[in-house]
Amino acid sequence: VSAVAAQLLKNYTNLTTASVKAFLLSATMNGSRTNNYPNRIDYNQGWGRLDAYRTVYQLSDEYEDQYNENTLGDVGSDFPQIVSYTIDVPNAADRLIVTLVWDDVPGAKNNSQTLYNDLDLYLRFPNGSVDTSTKEDDPINNVEKYIYNDPIVGAWTAHVTFLDLNGTNATQNYTIKYQIEREATTPNLIATL
Image 1 (cartoon, rainbow, N blue to C red):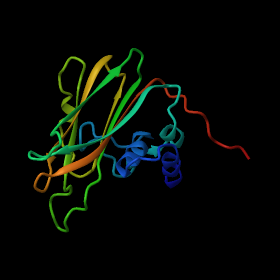
Image 2 (tube, rainbow, N blue to C red):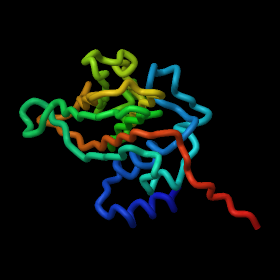
Image 3 (cartoon, rainbow, N blue to C red):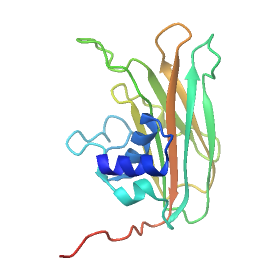
Image 4 (tube, one colour):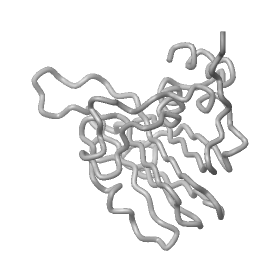
């Protein structure tokens, strides 16, 4: 994982720590996702097996691979309380992956609240209705990852907001990353000796 992170930082020199984590986690396979929390969190598998090549390079099977670093703020700060992103899903898309990551301070010892700042990512389908599986809060992880196989064609909307920001005029930096993929054709990187 550290070698992949080093390659990311070589290609994208100004990535924040949240962005590095977003790149890494958005390219994992066969692991946890936040859809229908807590049933989709796999505590044995974690977030999945890392696809190193897909983490660093946009492949020919990807329609789109975007990330955005931004900041949310509480009332009284100079930052918005919600930020929305439009994701245009084309015909023949096989998968939509949307990942939200933020850096959070460690929780207090023996505190029932795990996250200091609790952000939330929820998605709207092209018809404007909210995907109810994205409205379930994950109060443990500073990552939210949603995977849609055979996503509906059209303009989806990803909304980033917060459930709790601590402090007066509090703010929180975050990274959102989304990919729209066709059937995966990652090159075979297995060496034969």
